[in-house]
Image 1 (spheres, rainbow, N blue to C red):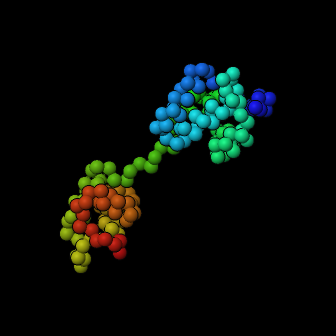
Image 2: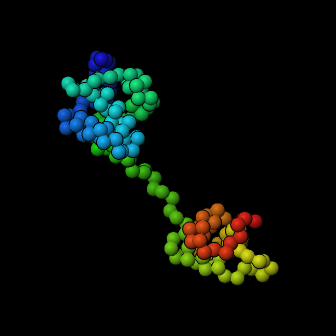
Image 3: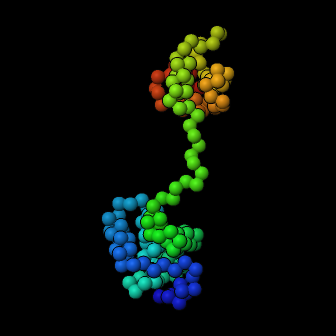
Length: 164
């Protein structure tokens, strides 16, 4: 098929027999996430080794209904980092946002929510709790939605259903 076209490519896919077997087994089982299976199909179609099909990027994109950037990224990652890197999820470059309420702070919030509400109020609202946890120095800042999610996990709050 377009072997001459792929030899001009910067990231040429040449799979070993062992790598081909691993990808084919992955597809036969079919129990992997869809993205992993798509990457395996892209590599098998792009392979220019003797056992490979050597398809052009255009043919792969059309046949697998994927994007130019996806085919490019899969080729590049295989050449630069190897087969395992292509098939595994990339670790986050930026760590996830740390939780505002750890176990101790969450316990303090729950205790506050279960305590008597401020004078003149029948119950704690999310906004009242939001202001109180900051005032007491439990956390530096928190939104009423964060407090609502935290309390919802416990199922033991006496909070009003609305935030008002």
